[in-house]
Image 1 (spheres, rainbow, N blue to C red):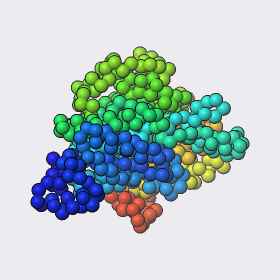
Image 2: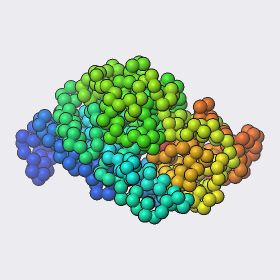
Image 3: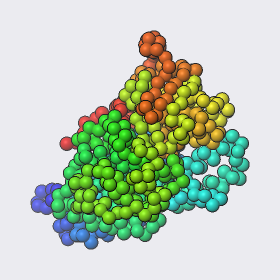
Image 4: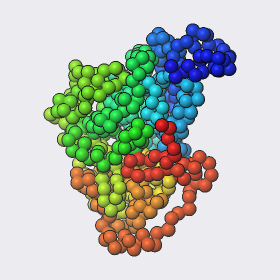
Length: 557
């Protein structure tokens, strides 16, 4: 076993003395050491129940003959961090999580791992670590929050942000907003729509790294504790069979993830995270392939904010496996791939029927014949940019309007709430990318302000920052190259006509190549917004191409 180096033989006597200090017995040290990576904390609602999940995992590992040992991983609540400097720190934690988990697992020579994440950057960060470490690993998330109810209608966090915009527009009272505050987030768990956390937890199932229900069983259900126990048992089976993450997270597995991503209508952040996870697994995943997959993959789900169903509804309808089974009716998935269940994808999804065609549309009656995400290119984004097509209203699929240009999120929000943005405008928010932000903030506040002001069906927004899975409307983000490195988005001027054609996968500013080159000759790089601390170090290391924001530092073999 890998752990023999710290538990067996005379050379490990000093290490055994330290295990004795932990209260461990000879019997425990004779078994495989299984690290339980706990993302528990008391500041993230999606993580406040993870202590109970971890206890269940430990029991499962012990029942199957392993010695469970817990160590921590950090996590940021994107909702609490939204709209201020804290959001600059969200994406960067993904790499911190991956790096620190690699350090802990390698320093202590664990034989296997169970990862217990839940929220936005925590899930991809631990998937990156799993691929990098390549020791037997199983994932079990903390689970989604139940939807709230306001005036008899299901609601979620995106409703809360939009309520603030409605209050600014004078269409909601303070008392009505307070009712939303008290009701939209009623339980622990990752926020209840198909936002980034739930997207990545569902895609963990698709990749084959989590058991059935990992992405959809609500956090408050006892069923999730049973799932956690089974995850603990299953990792011991993975160890016995020597099935490792890179045996599971193959190029075909990532193709499956992109396919189900399109069917579910996941967060556009998946277009940042999947390439980064694949990179650690030795697979180079270019997001350009997303349109090819989208062209053949129907969109089967309209979960909030794209529609009025929630994660609990998807769970009751049969979950991720039921969606996969629908897709498999047209042969859209690779089904011969290994998973942490010890079975193939095909064996896993066999017999997983769609129990509610209103939640999961049948394959022959989709919401659209193309997928929920589109990658656009043009003279604004020669590398790429991303839009959650399933959340765009039909009248905004093709849009043309004057640019309203802002060099930071705060200025754009002030203009929106101040009534300076009108129907037909295209709001441009730049210098918010991985380097320029730095940190690539999510733009949920501006999109929520637009929706709250009643402009969601008439105003587009493009940015080199990110869009939350909670965003809806013609919100086009991840514009690459970003403004800070001289990307064309830096050259757009107030009043330029922006042309967006989502069905054609294009986005352009109606300015000649010669004029753009003239503007480029005058463009000057800006001074860094942050010059000290971790954000400054991140900005100096990160690259922001169309494969997502990836730190260019040496990786473990």
